[in-house]
Length: 72
Image (tube, rainbow, N blue to C red; front, top):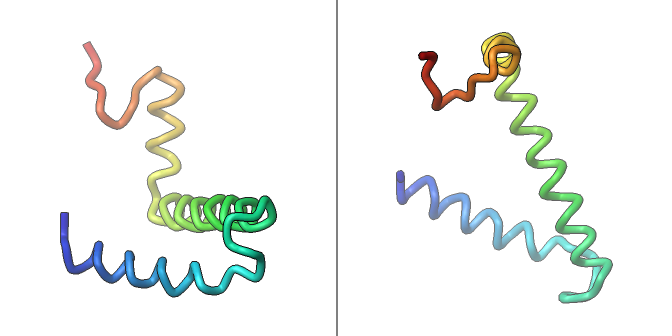
């Protein structure tokens, strides 16, 4: 793991957390964070597929393969 990249991400997450418009620990805040996580995952997934791995993922799923499995 690249500790500098992780630390930069960690610090950015702290700045992000301060942006939540709801009371810390409230149900609304938990929902807001959950929505942010889903949105970030969606953005990362779009970037992943934009890199051309969608076709490989589809082929692998059709053949019951995961990125970490081998065919026998």
